Length: 94
Image (cartoon, rainbow, N blue to C red):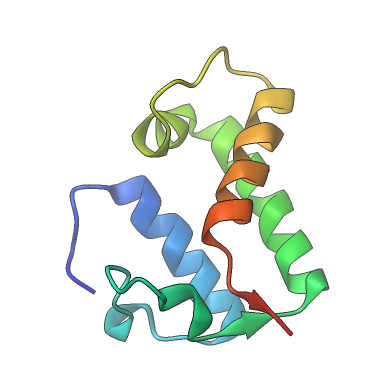
């Protein structure tokens, strides 16, 4: 993985890798099928979703870094953006 100018996205991807035991430093997130390299259970995905919603709420700049329009900071929006992220960038399911 090449270091990027997106520290919040990097932290999120590191967390995703940690959950499934993937090596963040060797992952090529520019590959069109990077998310098919590993898989997680529904329980792992749900745990990540909850972590991400909390992370987004506590670090609203992370939402701004990943999404263009972010609206106002509140827990409902944090969960909405967490759902959008997981729906678009999750590992395949086991």
